[in-house]
Image 1 (cartoon, helix red, strand yellow):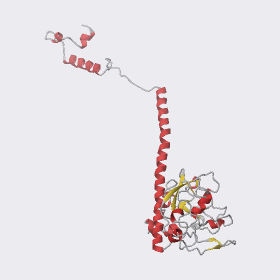
Image 2 (cartoon, rainbow, N blue to C red; image 1 turned 120 degrees about the vertical axis):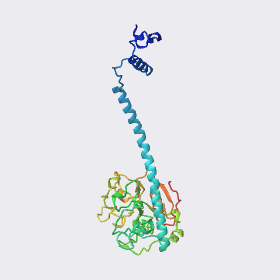
Image 3 (cartoon, rainbow, N blue to C red; image 1 turned 90 degrees about the horizontal axis):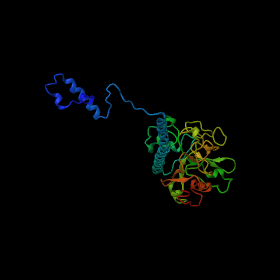
Length: 325
């Protein structure tokens, strides 16, 4: 009998004249048949093993690396887009809080970093941002006081939003004399080497009767080098008493203010005195809060003179509401 017939006997082989046929013969034949159906070798004791070659493995790794290289920028872009939306919403909520403050007190907050009262504008609006139980003594971090593209509440009671100083501080440089910002603080120059402290604040009706609330900046980002996002920002104007990033409830006059006569800048470790500029971590444009409560993004290329006019509520010239958008 041939090998094939031994494995698959003909029908007459299964007759009663073949007493040597046992159940084991059927099982062996069935097992061989099943192996043939599955496309396997007839060798029962030999196992087929498959593996990648080194070249194939390197190709797979290279493809994965390329995909990661393509996906990471896309993910970062989506994350930044989400952070920008959240940041703009923070500014919007701060604007609503200041308007509610104004409704109760007939005036916008005065940012007094030095005195205990009235305190910073952040301190003044605590009840209007659901922080009634917070205070300078509690010193709890407030999420909407921080730009999500920079940092979280893990940095403690810091803040990322600020206003322009009164442009009048640079009165010797034409034409800033007599220009005042809304949140510039209660102190301003007397143009004789000293300063006055009788600034009583601004009402929305004052702004409406001057440059207009939709043409006047209320709040934006205070510049900060990425190196100091976790703290340690250097002082302004080479004066160690002019702190620039301590807390939302204390610090010097530069703590929540920046130079309104200089151009906007994107946060950078390579810009000298970044802590004195209006700047943000966002790409392309900087989100800004206007006195009418709207939040609009302004280009980093806006002319510095226009920026100073936007901060000044009483410069006497109406600037378009979308300069350099």
